[in-house]
Amino acid sequence: MCTQQISDNELVAQFIKGDENALQKLIIRHEKKVYTSIYLLVKDSDLANDIFQDTFIKVINTLRSGNYNEEGKFLSWVLRIAHNLTIDHFRGQKRMPMAYDSEEYSIFDTLPLMDSNIEDRIINKQIQTQVRQLVDQLPFDQKEVVIMRHYGNMSFKEIAEATNVSINTSLGRMRYAIINLRKMIEEKNLMLSAD
Image 1: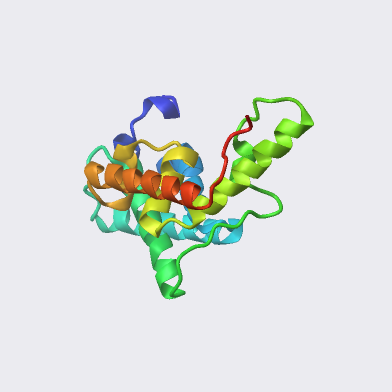
Image 2: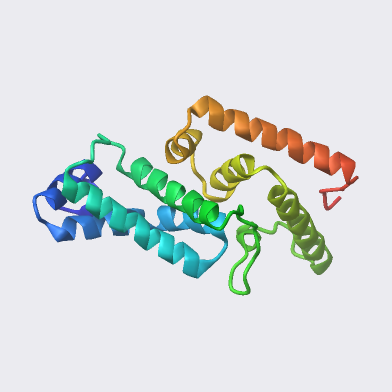
């Protein structure tokens, strides 16, 4: 049977029965989304890898102990574990994450550039930098929702499950983030348009 045809629940059941390959299939299936959700918050590939590994160690321990009961919501459960471990990391450091691009990666490099001339590319890069700086100034809960929604391509349902809040809370945080971003744009008199 193909990995994509076997549900997460079936793979979890197989792992609990002793099939180590079932867990490997689950990790391969979800690693990109889990890693990306961590990386977008910590902005450090080594730290993201550490938290990713800690996440799956906790997943394995929970599954082996028989305490898993997230029927049909494996990915959301794993994302919630990853989110909580990320928050725990920053609480331990008594600081919230600051968003810095690294030399090898910038989240804004993944945004498509519609214009082909160099002037438009420079303007777009400046706009992306300004937007990144504005998002970095948002309160953590709002910044987290913006990152997960726009850069992680997560639905509000997935965000709610990953952050352990209601969908309405996720939507509210996004709404306040947009309000705050608009205020900052007005206060700084920014022109976020290439026109």
